[in-house]
Amino acid sequence: MDDALEVEDLVMHFGPVRAVDGITLRIREGSVVALVGESGSGKSTVGRCVVRLLEPTGGTVRLGGADITHLNRRRLRPHRRNVSIVFQDPAGSLDPRLSVGDIVGEPLRLQQLRKGVQAKVAEALRRVGLRPEVAQRAPHELSGGQRQRVSIARALISEPRLLVADEPTSALDVSVQAAVLNLLADLQRDLGFACLFITHDLSAVEYLADEVAVMYLGQLVEQGPRGRIFGHPAHPYTQALLSAAPVPDPVEQRTRRPVLLGDDLPSAIDPPPGCRFHTRCPVAVDTCRTVVPEPRTIGEGGHQVACHLVNDDGTGPDVRTTQGAAR
Image 1 (cartoon, rainbow, N blue to C red):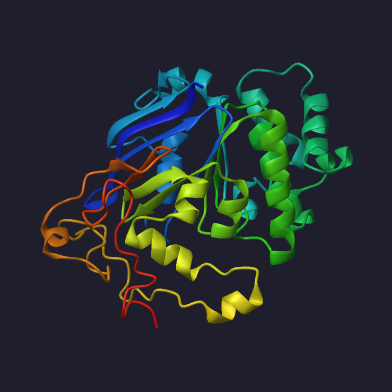
Image 2: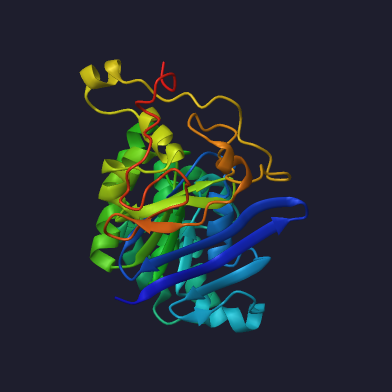
């Protein structure tokens, strides 16, 4: 299967801030890759580089095999229809001066695909569960869930090969989040687009994603098939994230012991030497403090991890059971 997206050694610095510092990631056609990590880890910056809202400092971004990393606006335009983004805040991403119909149809007009725009807008709204007459309304007349459906309709109307969904449910009420996630899952299955799903909601990841990439302080520390990441997490940071995620069984939830990492995420201006996680890792050794771990394949199924303490067969320390790591 071909790659919808290839990101090779992606770097994005904002002056002294090393927001993204060498990311390599691939998304196959029709698959969903979830990018997870704490706030401040650089996830959204990766998404904005992928859709070229930001021009990367270094590395390569290929969309359907085409290098779009440093294309100017004119040369980038033909590629715009192949990638779209859904932002975290639907209220902030919809122009309040335009009607819903104009907002959803705007990508077609920008691509000079003006024939049948009104019919395509009506179909796009229907596809996301909104009535065609919503096209006449203004964004402020809609609920948060409806606005996010409009954002999804706008993103998909040009039939992109890749959708970047940047925390698409975090600004919504809990009662609406499940409906929007179900909608994304149905649309991805029916339309077959690839998706970079950026989130910190691990329950949504387990529901939607085919593969998972775990990001910490600008770098990927672990990536692989969803089943491997959730069933056999290798990196101590991944283990800590999963230990903090709630489970639907109330009995099990009461007995769980989340790993308490302590300290805040270090500064991206001056990241720690060696493994960037060593300042918070309960099992770090001297090597972790001085030597940068290289990503390597472990076990089966393309599971990769960047950790000195993980063996080639995937075995290693589990901070969820380490004495003193959990309380």
